[in-house]
Amino acid sequence: MAGLSSRREPGRVRNPRAEYYAWKMEETERLFDELRTLSESGVPIIVEGRRDEAALRKLGVRGRIYCLKARGESRHDFLERLNGSSEAILLTDFDREGKKLETWLYKELSQMGVKSDLRLWSRMRSLARTEVRSVEELPSFVRALEHRAIGIRPLVARLPRK
Image (cartoon, rainbow, N blue to C red; front, side, top):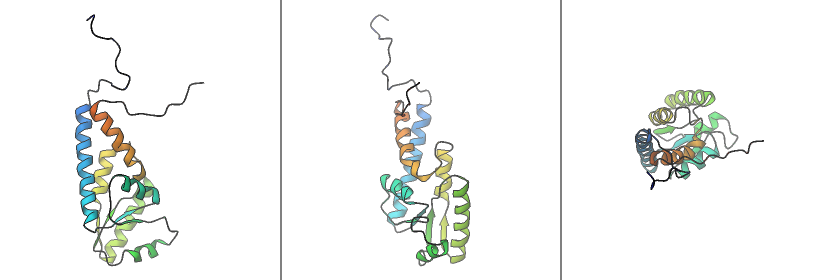
């Protein structure tokens, strides 16, 4: 034992849940690959704001993304822009307001004959659980998962104690 150092690397921690985080990372990557594929095939994605759009762009989504609250237009004017689409992916935030908005969009789009995909939203919500409340937090969530999967403590800004 004399040859072993008793100090650990500051960034590395023993992580008994590394396998769980690796699995979660694989599922998240699979989910975003599916989102990218659907988006590139022409299926529009509906998000709440510009930051949500920016977050999806950071994650490699290249297709059409419509921001519901970005233009200051009414919800019905927004729906008219989607006229002609046969399907759409709904990615509202995971909070109470986002759920209400998602329910309203689903009903309205169904009446217009647009098939709304909620499967990705619900899978993303179940993977992120309490760690993510909005779409704009997804890139930092993915980064934290990558670190946890390899056993590195995610960097967190800490305030100095007074």
